[in-house]
Length: 256
Ligand code: PEP
Figure 1 (cartoon, rainbow, N blue to C red):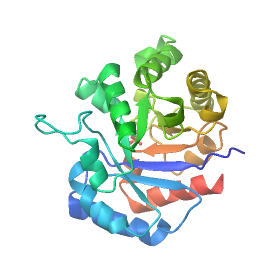
Figure 2 (cartoon, rainbow, N blue to C red; figure 1 turned 90 degrees about the vertical axis):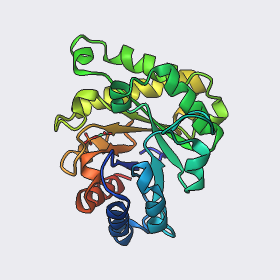
Figure 3 (cartoon, rainbow, N blue to C red; figure 1 turned 180 degrees about the vertical axis):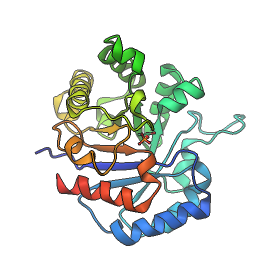
């Protein structure tokens, strides 16, 4: 059994108004707001952060953003910075999600700047990496994951690394209903743990949570979460409803 506490993070993407989000958070607080076996992070859109922060106040649930700019302030119309997120009690930030990489042309170099800025501002990055279907089929999965991970973590100091969270999200499994097999997922998670060991030493790598993301649902979660190097999940679709999200948190608690 691993000493890493399981982490379940909900990525709401561009869903829910501020009031709809607050209602969902209130439902979650009522059912899982006091549990401590699993770390739970909710990531609403920027417009929902403040109302979500109020709704989860006094609970064990934590707040994450889905993106940020790497500069602390300035002429970057439409962007939001790490200090702004911190001021709304945000503790985590998803960086390098495949939708940001593909629809908004985010490169590894840009993601690296964001990771460094997040850490500088005491925000925990949830760094997403993962291969496309074509890359998996051509046998390039591990190479792609290695390039993305190493590039995004360049310059991260060993003493900051334990607060990182990595999410392995095979792009072909996101929102498609196709889930990686437990063997496929565990293979990549163990590979990422090996990369982290080389970058930051074994004791540090053992502290870093590596989440699986891609059509994780209550039905497939127990088997995935039981794998040695799968420390939780980054959940899209199933995080939008209290019932499925609570079931996922319970599934993670059951393998603690
Ligand atoms: C995601 O977007 O991070 C994700 C894992 O989505 P889904 O669970 O819907 O596949």
